[in-house]
Length: 134
Image (cartoon, rainbow, N blue to C red; front, side, top):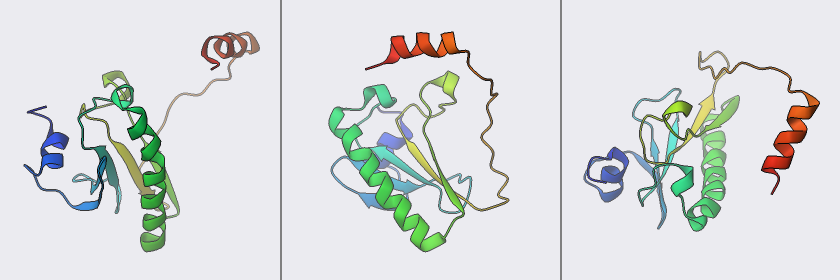
């Protein structure tokens, strides 16, 4: 994708602070970090969102995220870590190239992720189970 910032980073057209590179992914520091150590994992191949990832990319993603999370924990000792990934404009996706955020959390860092919460009824849970069960 000629206008995709992550594709340009992947091909070397734009620079980034690369933490890891393999045949499928780059892990880079976020240019606009929520907290110190905020990292993005991006596939080298353009995939707009999770639905565009290949099975091989999807299978390799979480082991890589775990390795990076372990390194963040060892080096920065955050109190916690968020994994965040948005798919589509309605979900808050801004750059339409798949990316997984690893956001270290430090006590009172003022980063919030809030969603309204309500208890689902038993019939609603049963219906969704029937519709979504693999």
